Amino acid sequence: MQISRSLNGRVERRLPIIIAVRLLLKADSPASEELSYTDNVSLHGVRVVSKRSWRTGEFVHIESVKEGSLMRGRVVYCQSLDDSFCVGLKFEEPVTWSLLTRYQPTRSAQWEGS
Image 1 (cartoon, rainbow, N blue to C red):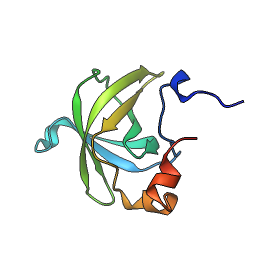
Image 2: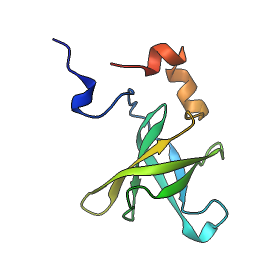
Image 3: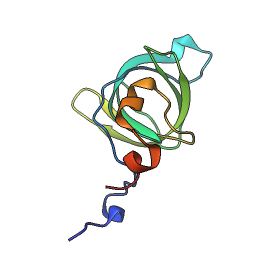
Image 4: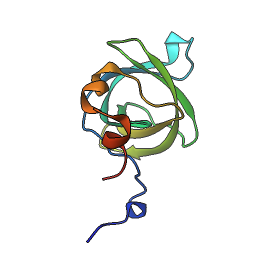
């Protein structure tokens, strides 16, 4: 029996990859940055751990610390943990961090469904 993807709201496969990232409220403001890491990554989004609460719909810039590539994401959820928050970010453009290229032999085959 195949389980419908609509039951959990997820369309893309998530990969449990930890990437060191920098979260920025504004791309040109170092005062509003936080060093963090991803919990999982999909082609159009990430789940990151944060020290602060984020509002749904808020925009955040996220940068891979290793590569320095900056992306803009929208907060789709923020879950409270004991001493931190898990934040889901959705991107309009596909994630381009080089670490992910190892996990996507062909973009359509690897990232669609499952």
